Length: 92
Image 1: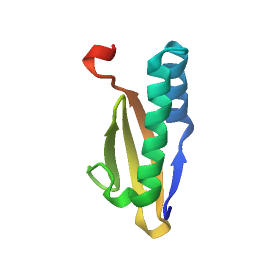
Image 2 (image 1 turned 135 degrees about the horizontal axis):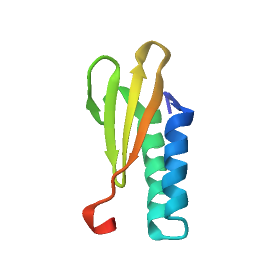
Image 3 (image 1 turned 30 degrees about the vertical axis):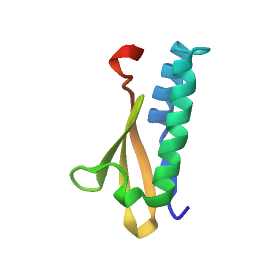
Image 4 (image 1 turned 60 degrees about the vertical axis):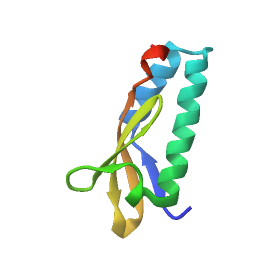
């Protein structure tokens, strides 16, 4: 684990709303598990996780989430800037 992952309040609040809406269903567990997988991927190698975007931006899809983040190589930090609940069509 070489990278520090910082979840900004906005994305965490977004995910909290998603989880609250589906609490007690398999979807809430799927969100929690996807967050853990994102953390692990970014902690391991944020600079190569997901797909690149402009500037420091990157995006990773870990169903049922889409996570946008910035990579700061000099400090080996990934900052989560946006989180979206994007379940497969069957899960909606």
